[in-house]
Length: 167
Image 1 (tube, helix red, strand yellow):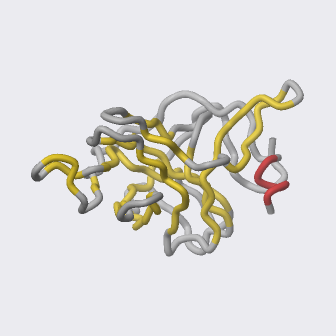
Image 2 (cartoon, rainbow, N blue to C red):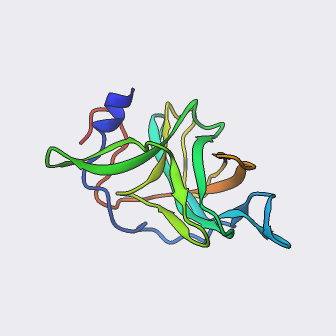
């Protein structure tokens, strides 16, 4: 499965090509300052797909004075969720699991975007159509989970295809 995921990447990049209303932000219930969530995500979205593979994106926001590390993810849409990065390997851009997870710097952000870090969903059990609302939970190292809902969006980008055998 990991080999198939590594072979899927080809020229990720760009911005979503269809306009959609921004998804609501989500946050952990732990507070950084009085009434301010420790970790939030803005504009979470999932690339539309049939049953197979897809990815989720958004911007993680850390409202604390210490780095926060995301170590895992889960969604009812997929039995296998991995935190992935895109790197150059042998002159090609490939996806692979992100060692150590996603680190969101203190008082900073971490982009999850096509062609970069993303939440990879393998073995998707239902079609994701534009506007679909997909629940997610991210596991935070030494902290409370971040629960949010991502919105399905069409994305052409760099001709990404998260299906097995495509490059």
